[in-house]
Length: 513
Image 1 (tube, rainbow, N blue to C red):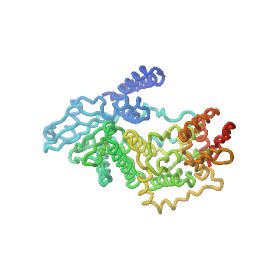
Image 2 (image 1 turned 45 degrees about the vertical axis):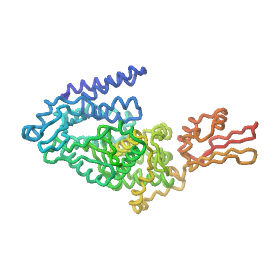
Image 3 (image 1 turned 180 degrees about the vertical axis):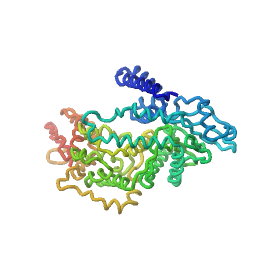
Image 4 (image 1 turned 90 degrees about the vertical axis):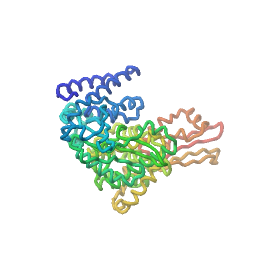
């Protein structure tokens, strides 16, 4: 294993070279080969490079995410003869006194690898062993990464780089101590015990140490297999997934922040869904005031009232960075929390939140990205995991129903949070359009009058029949350009277009109000 500073430095140089080739490649075959080599190098370096690759495996780009998925649980493990001494040291006895049998080929993770075994008493277990020397290698990784993803030049001003560094160091330090992970796993198991379908493997405390973690063996199928189940089974899994996530975040305030595909398994038996969760090294406790602030933003988005600035400041966002984009905050929140505004089931595959938020913020995107507090990265990672699995399951669920118990349980505390907008309603939901109107008149009579939620304007062309859509395009209007313009305006009330057809005496008007 490449743990020395020199070997890892050379490894990073090779990693950077392969990443550069991948970015510059326009040929699909060359790009695929470069991506394969990049994944191979990440797997060999282990530590933070492999963990970064695991996060990339959950991206929206199917081709890219598929390539990086091998880093979730199919990377090359260390030979067992390099792992066995760590087990003997941890237990203080020969392996034969602890296990009846053990699979010598492990499943590689970023900081350690897992071996299936049977204890002398017949219990099937998973034994996670930390890679020898991985702590030193991981700390070296942090220095060599150089925080290159942080803004450069003048943009560094106002960016809490030390805060992010401290959060990641804290998380990494905890993840390298399996005694802490064992405690987290027991705590999360208690939290999720009453949640339908969730299964957290039991920790075998007598065999768990700082560098070795032993739990009962609980298996299941990968998300790719779960995605092939019947619609009813996929819906049950998706419902359990969202209910469990909201329970851990809003009721318990304790979330699993490492949701890559290697840490989840699924199943369905006896008419019940089954979600198995592994690896509790990266957990995050969310304080009550932060939970309430997130719930308040959700509630405001659902109601379409109030100024989101105060809850954002309560979360730790930087006021100086938010003030210049204050008039866009309601539109951003409306997009982030859009699933909660739908009375029925919401399909995350139709969300497109990244592109839409980019359109809303335009050149101000760095203001919003830099304004967030460092700790929020863990909540965002967990939230991204939720949407990733809902996307892969392809089973829309009702977010508004799932969040309702948490809004009701915190009704008094939420009502006490003052979010009344300023007199000019700048940045408040009240300044946004509520409805999209489509009207077709023939002479002085209305032939068609349709009303939709304002956000339906993002897919304006899909709301019209083929004849009307063709007529509008024929007059030189571009629905994609209209959508971008609407988002740049922050969904402000406005006329979108009006077309007069003299030959048919018809007028088509579309506006936001």
